[in-house]
Image (cartoon, rainbow, N blue to C red; front, side):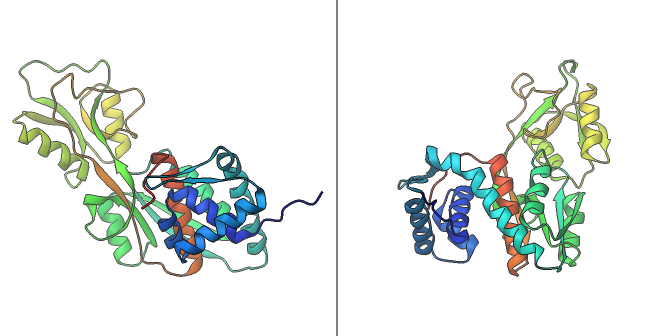
Length: 291
């Protein structure tokens, strides 16, 4: 019995729809129309004999068969890209900056996915404070940066929400009537600014007892029980607990993670799309509006 032959465009359309949970965004990412994306998906579903994507006016989601097919589909695309890359000796560099207070457990997956997508790509990554990264981006020393929305007011690609909380070690003790003991990064840190504004607006006295030169230093101070700190909920030290309600601390506003780049060539756009999809895969809800 003959097996159905898969074409790369149809499989790529399916994977991109799954990554963005949106036909519109998938079409934009692939540089085509929503109608063309729909035709490619339908062609793939007919060839396989299964419904892969369930679409309603409110959401786009994988069917059971689509969920089973997604990883093999990624492997199919990756194998195609490796085969094509083997025919070209052209190597290029992709210089990526990720803000220290944004980089999390998804970074290894981002790098692995970029390498899988384009093995000939040399990836350079800088983990620094947002201001340094944005300056390097503006001067052309970085191809793309991932920062929080309030770190830069320019338009970018929204990668998802970022939520914050107040964290401390379980053994942390705050003396009644004394200013709250706070640990933070240097004054140029946006998270510090959010925390201090929130405390000040609520009339809560605070005392900065530890200033770290990097995110790891602040994490160490909080884990040691020296102070309280505002952290992204996904980046707080594993040995700390959220203590905002216990100490009557103000709720911290959420932010958005943004990807900025000015690259327009096909290989760079592919790398950026892969980067954004891998980031969302680790951080976003499974169902979003199809728009």
